[in-house]
Length: 500
View 1 (spheres, rainbow, N blue to C red):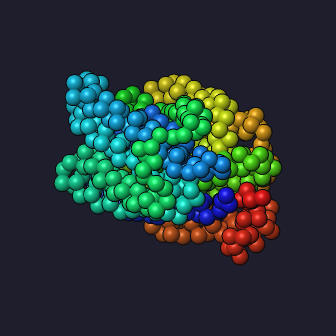
View 2 (view 1 turned 30 degrees about the vertical axis):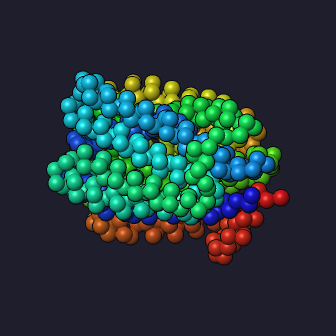
View 3 (view 1 turned 120 degrees about the horizontal axis):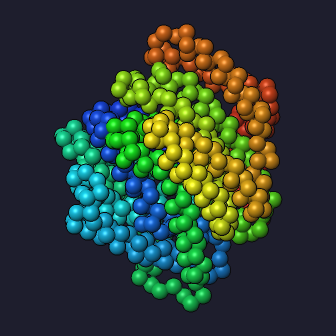
């Protein structure tokens, strides 16, 4: 099967950009209506959802994308994979939602947390069911190479979420209103996904038994290892908030969440590359195309590093102008943790394509060891630094552990047999970043108005960054030709699709 890696990355990244553009003008309203304390409670619920989702999803999202994309001689292979994973998804999510509801009903949630969290957890159970259905539909579309159909679903979801959530919060429902907005929006997204799938797979396969030669154990083994891997990954992402909320309070958690939201801008391109490369590289692994895997990983890693460093220097310089305008003066406390997070976020960003390609092979042991080491480091550092330094301590702990992901996953890649940093050009990209920072930082300092700075500095920074990158060789002639031509065929030659 020919797989257009470029189209997948563009579809995912493009949809993520649109989602962020929708969120950009609306997030300040949500934050102001909730206030720092309720926003901290909402951040805690999002973090809990992120960790719980690993077990509820049961590896379905990754498993579907990996196996439905592979070439198999079994007749109706795609239908069997869809039916099998749909049943697995239901078996994971329904008991999980029931357990959460029982915990809320008998008072476990109220005993551990504040009373208002009982309602939040009832809503969380419903949201998990909606997310599971959406995950199945979206992953099948992606695995079949239809990222141009799957990713606009996320835009549709946000078009429903934002007006419902802000309206309900304004009406006084607080965090419950935001969660209801998520529930409605995700159910709509899931319904549309299944309408599109009705033309691609047979829904009757949900009720049919798979044939005796269907590799159930192989798929379940991958799922089990994926659960472990995703738990570690999500623990790395959410440990700081889960520890900061009880140790430092909801208000500090709210300030820290504001910093995380801005730092997440750096992950738009890396996240798109990660999602696209899992099922694309899975096909290459199944055909033993190790040379192509190494080539793709090296190019993807360099491009991700280049783009992420551009965003990083811009956010670092403009943070003191942007944060107070965006969130309000109360959130000035978010500026320092944001800057402390950035370096680690860059390391994690560069590790994402490496992580995805390794996952595409299906042998997850090395990835589990690498991610587990970063998680252990993260927990220890957060427990040590949060009591001493609050949000700044959480940011330093998280930044160090995020950065360690790059080192650990380069090791895991080499263990699996591919070289992801053979063309990283670290020194050249670092030099490009330093030159850009040395120009835009003084420029931002001498501009008195934050509004003027936010409009004037980014275009200047982009021009300086690109000119310096070309001069020092961080961007070469092939890159320039592609950017000028914008030819998919050009990149298809640079990022082989796995044909032949």
